[in-house]
Amino acid sequence: MLKKIIIILAILIIVVIAVYFIKHSFVLIPNGEEGSEENYVGWSDYKNEKFGFSLKFPLSWDGYEVSEGDYPTYSYAGFSFSNSHRPFLIFQILQFDKNQWQAVKDVPAFRILDKTEERTLVCDGCCQENQDFSGGGQFDEFQIERCKEGPEIMKTFRAE
Image 1 (cartoon, one colour):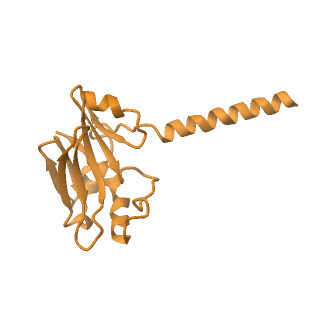
Image 2 (image 1 turned 30 degrees about the horizontal axis):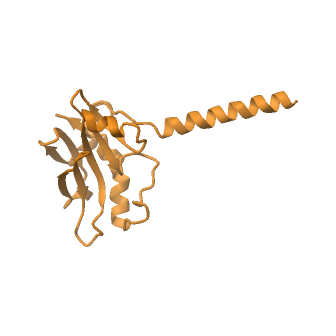
Image 3 (image 1 turned 30 degrees about the vertical axis):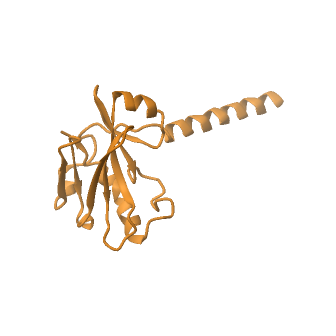
């Protein structure tokens, strides 16, 4: 009887560990795998020449702002709203060169959007289904609704 309990506990531990690693691993979304053009009729196009990607945004994102910056460890394009809302990024596309990526490649929160020999683009923030859409409790209701749209916006990501 004790042997059966030990086996059942071992199986449960293995399942829990596997679910944890699956849930917290990077997600690579190849260009064009998700989303169909007819799903995004009326959405506006955004193209970022510096980082080499494009996205589509729904009408509810009218008035969004893009900020760009370079840090020693990464570069970013951040998407937010400043019109009477707290100034928090809804999501950002981070770009890492080959060396920078080696230092952060094990961070489970990043969603890999595109990976080449020279650089890796990831989404940080409201990028995935089944996440906290409240910005850690900092977003107002408008920002929460935009955050919920992030995963669908990410389906329109295309590397240029």
